[in-house]
Image (cartoon, rainbow, N blue to C red; front, side):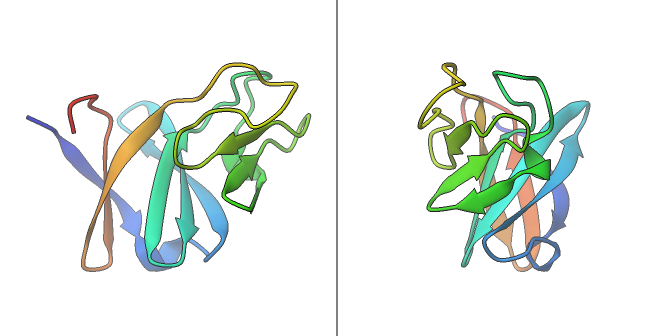
Length: 106
């Protein structure tokens, strides 16, 4: 059984933008693309800085420090210097509420 936590409102996330939230003690970057919201671990796998301080473009989230980009669907890096993916999490939208599950079995 999956546990979803309410983390924010859809309207809190700028379209084609990103915000950082906490789910328990886990940092999560929420990316909004139109009506969809994607959740990725909010720590770059290359430099261990917050991805939520980066930019969103062409379906990727770019780390502000060295420019590593991560696919918002899979968490996989799309180019160097990052070589390891970041975790992605399951998102549910309930009205204007964004709910995130850290469980692998969502």
